[in-house]
Length: 168
Image (cartoon, rainbow, N blue to C red):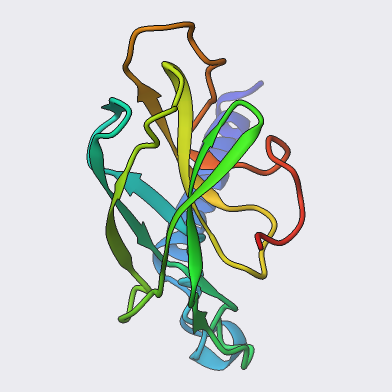
């Protein structure tokens, strides 16, 4: 490649970089008339500690616990109400309590007790909307003597790892 062709290619790449940076840093204003919020974060769950013993209390927190997405399309966001807080291990699901999400970030926080018959090893805690088949979950390790349970991967969603269908 000749020097002037090389220089032209470098200038072209630099121009593309500037345009790309301008587009990615300008945000979403201007998309769909400038009203797009695009803040439709999926539900998140966290627990106060990664390891707990049977009978021990942990704090479960959820954020963005809502259905719908107000992205400028007119869809209404609705906080989850009467959502199940579940302890999941092996092939069983134990409902620990129910919560209502509130506030701008659709949050809920509750203290729950790890079931006394939980097996040592992998488990998860989830918050499940009664209309949704795929609850967000956080991995938990149960500490106790005895045979270990199979590990569950997490955090994230239980899609594909738990029976589908609405939580009763």
